[in-house]
Image (tube, rainbow, N blue to C red; front, side):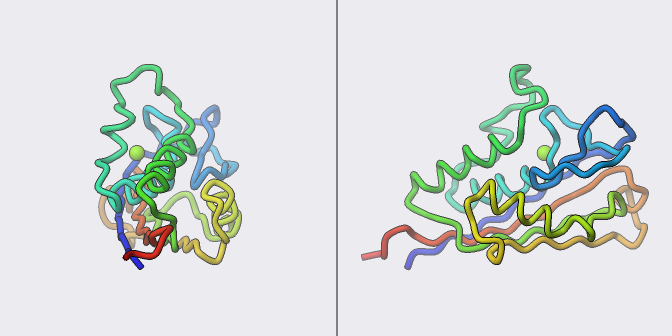
Length: 165
Ligand code: MG
């Protein structure tokens, strides 16, 4: 069995903007807060897409979806993940599991954990038991500790669709 591992790391600034949806893993959290960015700024999906691309050596999302492209403004990040997933399949792999860690003081996501996992399961066509989603803080240290933004770290493991000869 051929295996590939990938990691992705993303950061977005956090602001108060009731008019902008707060999306994490494709799941909308009802909040006054929102993440800033050229696309919908879903930091979880961005880290995940970078991990998928990294595992197959296909660059990063900035390369495929440049933030200088005005047509990509407020882009639905599920499209970015679907694009990366398409490349994963083209390369002859499927996801074995993913593991995600969100870092920041706000928003508090513990109560949304299972909803976020279910959202990711739907986007990826993956059983929810193959999706880990954790959250931690920086113990109030630094920019993330001052709630200026949120980071997400993603790890994916890919397995080959056909046994290696
Ligand atoms: Mg991003």
